[in-house]
Length: 446
Image (cartoon, rainbow, N blue to C red; front, side):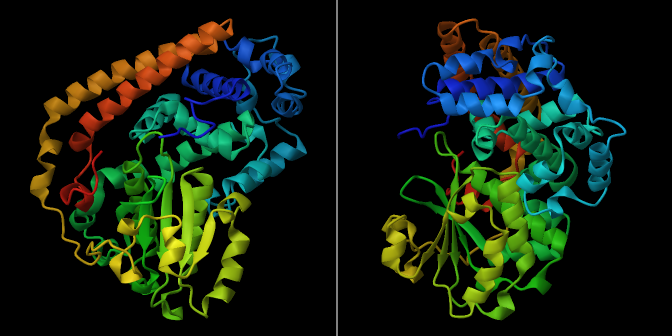
């Protein structure tokens, strides 16, 4: 399978500089010593511009004006400017006032947040979190993804602006730890909803409002959403958000390198105004834009009824242009067949897939027997810590590389270690995550 551009396996020299910068910032916050002078000054990027990457060079130069000259004198300390807001200044006061005005996820997108908060506020987002917690959550956020490719999603989403990408990652880690808790949601799975007696969440699960079963022509998992089954009174807002995150994180379980995005098919067959609920739509949009960048391949709106255009006129105003560009309206089986193989299109939509989307059965607790095997889990986790340390050591050597040859040597090592990390997670998964219906029926093979 061809690997798209902007991934660690296909990264350009100028993109590699931005990736090195971001790792250097993270290491500094985590207390990992690294000599980052080469990558945190303009020297490397200016040198790159002589090889034909003037766009990156000029962009990075303008981004670093006023900060790079000062920080180049203090190797490895550039992250300090992310920690300090200028006390007493009007900008700082305004920023602190804004920081107190409610949940950041109530904003339209992370892009808005980053414009609203100056770089100095990023430390405010992390001020109540220990560096060890942030570091631990980063490694827990990985499934079978490569660490570099996870970070590269944020860099691509912020057009290779290191500062903005770092702000976006900080915001996401803060959200995962203190608000969304998606790692706990995916590990508890459907069974946790029954154990916690979350009736609204259980109803969403049993109705299979969203189902994962097939793959599109680019091997991306397809999430089939059936809004005709939704009524806002069926669940609380908290249960709705938890269901959205369960589906998103389940979709992530289906991703296999180099595939790093999913396709969503909104089937509006039978949709009526009684099914319309703007709240989950807003929440999904905010999640994809703020916390799951570059994870959406296509979003199909299929068989939109005549009542839908006024609704769409409202929704499209909430969308980031990048997300909006991935939305495709389809009306027929032939329209879908341009993107999905016939075997992935449900029979009721004219395809060949005879999967029963209404046959959800509560997972049997016996499927989770490995969750009780703490000895095996701890042994695999111990191996994982060793692999992570190998990756960190290789990344330090890569950041500190004095020339392209050495840099490539360590980049290749990082890719190799990433494969080890992926295989380790595959071993670990049944010992930390409750089996979902997809594990049990064989649809999901981690």
